[in-house]
Length: 154
View 1: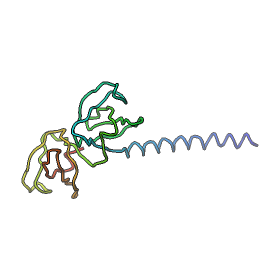
View 2 (view 1 turned 180 degrees about the vertical axis):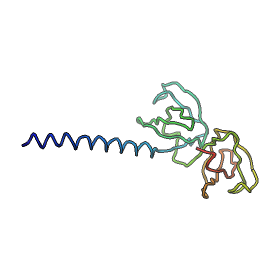
View 3 (view 1 turned 90 degrees about the vertical axis):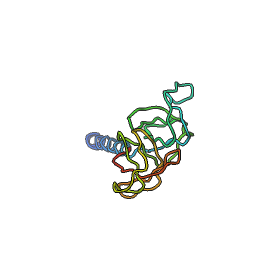
View 4 (view 1 turned 30 degrees about the vertical axis):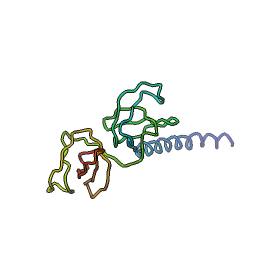
């Protein structure tokens, strides 16, 4: 009788737990943490430590999607799906966006009927100040402010 119960456990419960584990992993991946660069410029490294090569630099307010953590280091992905390592002291939880359109109009108020204050090329990071529907009030590290439509950012 014990072997029949064990057989049912192995036949039904174990596969159910495996499926549940995959579902939980999918939810975790879809709700990945986002951080942003909190210093004027930050070095991106090839591995978790200053002994690893510096690959490139990122500017203040650049948003990052956390892929993994290792001690004091964060493995991240940016809006172009490029990956690298960053020390945790160089990032914060400040909400930021980065422009993805070829040329993005930054307006004086939310809406296309408002004047264009300035334009930004793809890859310019901004801090989020406020949201109104699909419009985002943003500020660049140099202090310039305006409104951008959410369809133009990551």
